Length: 399
Image (tube, rainbow, N blue to C red; front, top):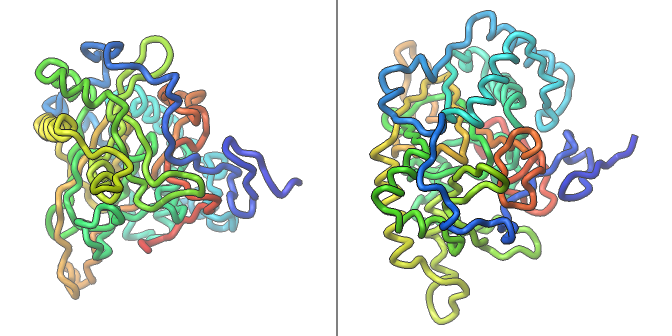
């Protein structure tokens, strides 16, 4: 057998990329495929447009608790995978068979891609299983939805949302998920994002989500000038030092995009912290890129306010998994406070820090993913963050 495989982006050694696939990373679009605002629809319709009021008092429409039998199936698959000795970075759907749950996960995948775009599972026994088995089970479930991609320059395909004491004001080099600060409405760099709650905080750290298409429709009615600004591909985004050889430390793009092909849908791709952290490149006599314009600053304010007005609030308990589809769901997080060191629960057990395991999952165009105007549209591991040939890693806890 050959010791290397050819991926969409490079020849990757199997010793480093056990599933034979490499994350493609952040890139500028194929500019010939980018559509101007004048071609954007006046309104979006269909199941991707939803009102939070539809779901606020009906959690059964977007929440499902795993049964004991389903958890037993997940547990058995996780145990078999662990016993196989395969590295966690090599997990695939074929190596994590779920004969009963697979139909539910296939239906969920379709609903995430083309329906409401969000869901919450409950009752995964993470306390009983511990970090390693919970990580295997979680990633195994994720393989039914997409292909995991790297979330940072260190190749973490299993991420950890945890306060590591970093300064959230240093946005040019600090990723907010490593702090306890509020996160504004944003999207992540994969098609889907999953969050498995391992432990809750003392207070805060709660989730808000919103239909991007509901936000878009409201803005088109009340602030079409803002939509035009958000659709103009003259925004600059910070790579925050996660740069491959030959890349600029930023890339240019837009906030709202239009799919390629017939009947295109509007989709969002934005993290405001990556737009506001570029002062080292856009100010002073040696500025290399323009600073945010007043129109762009105003558009960001209106977008955040509108997202907040239309959002659905969600609280994750230990054992809950939230899945979102980034192209048509924006998400945010409230600031939080962890339990003081040495705190114990009602049974006398130590209280851990707030801890969420995170997955970014890609869905290529040929497998139902949205038709994005990027050269990697059909890469199995499109998007994500890839620095050079950094191999994937699955740390079981934050590092």
